[in-house]
Length: 366
Image 1 (cartoon, rainbow, N blue to C red):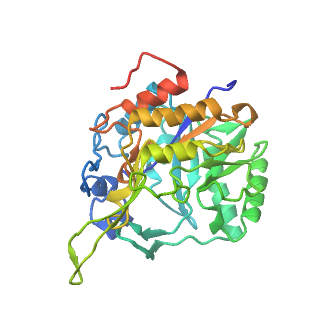
Image 2 (tube, helix red, strand yellow):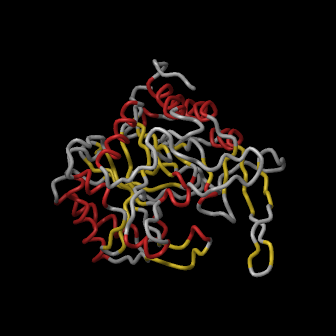
Image 3 (cartoon, rainbow, N blue to C red):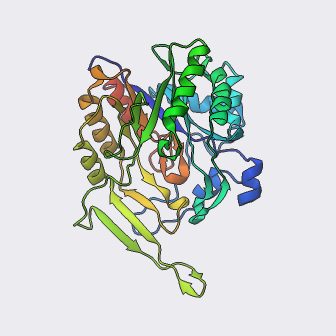
């Protein structure tokens, strides 16, 4: 491997109150509200996921953001990929990144991914109940890229050969993604950049790579790309009686995938140098989807490290434009998906990441 791997940790900014969440979910709602209430659904189910070193932080505070960046840097994380929320000019959860932009002390490199989905009541399985709707148009494409260019000009913004890196989460939702990217490229070049480096989140190995994009990254876990399941040890649907709803008991359907089996399945897939590799340390969205959670059960730092080492040793880094490795995620606590230290594992996942990326070091798994 000739290139030094650059781990990019996906970053969720929903750890501070906003007016919209106050209205929809109750005063003071943040991501901690759901994650701290989660309960185990079966034997050996790791819930709730509770923070350790950084505590229940508020991302409006400079001290919290600086502590995150210091922790990330100390374990070799190259940068954060901030979820960006834009609804025809309306922004939500923008405050942490806006405050970083004004604060030179927050010097960790960053990029952005537009989470271009409708906001719905997905946490209570009411995905048809739309809270904020995405509307696409050429006019909005122009307005959006004009808003983004000042971020791209920031010296901390991650670029490839001078081209700012930007991603969209769901390219299939655009009425004409080719036209949108054409507009964006033109405006980025007019702003003085050599070009745009535009990518998307690939959810499945079967997802078509559209030629208007420069790259994709593996979004892990890939819910549609899971092991065949003749054995309950690999894939198990668990039914558990819960509270009465409309006079009847509602049995949740828990999709419980063994983490090691899932990782082994992913390791059998072929790499594409235009699709940067992705990995997840663990996943359990019980806190968000109480009735239909997807769980990667029995994740450990050692199993994660084996998957990560496979990626480091086998991805064709020399053929890729850069050496990004996307880790989902830095702080998705309500999805049980985080590199940030928790009360069960401490910094073990960060240590595993550093050991693989930088080689044997002074850190050791706890």
